Image (cartoon, rainbow, N blue to C red; front, side):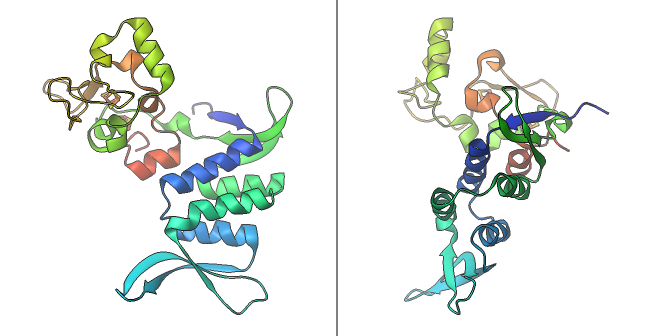
Length: 231
Ligand code: SF4
Ligand code: SF4
């Protein structure tokens, strides 16, 4: 069996990852209900609220604080902000941050000391089970995989490498704009399907944008966005 892949993160980074998870996928009703009631107490259950006069129903979570009869509804749009408020008003204990991290990321994690002997969290990322099978799904289907912004470090690297072919497809830091039409492309210009195979390659693999290199960010990110690397 391959060695377990682990990473060490600070408590504040763990909180950031939790918040990022809800901001990139806010409609996690059950999970939000669990996390919110764990942090503030009371009872939280997923549900809906009907908004007059149109009668449109919004998904979210009903929360009943301890010792109060009145319930309050939180629309899924608010999840991210609510958690930010809770974390800024009172920082949970180290043990609670680990529990929350396990709950949200679905990974084993425990308190320990890191390379500089600072306390933080060791996370078993399970990325040792991941293997890209070059199915091309992310490049073809995840809009933010090919039409987003380049990081400053990408821009600097491409300039240093003299990759004017890549820079030609960028306006400002926007990826990928056709130099011919001035319009956003509908498919990444660097993606190629291998002849007679169901496999794809990235023609700029060695210098591809940071957000492509970072994909998938975690096992949860991979499973949520349809990456086949864990199958
Ligand atoms: S640059 Fe490469 S990895 Fe990124 S979307 Fe295009 S083909 Fe895929
Ligand atoms: S979806 Fe996952 S397995 Fe498929 S090409 Fe992208 S990273 Fe690789």
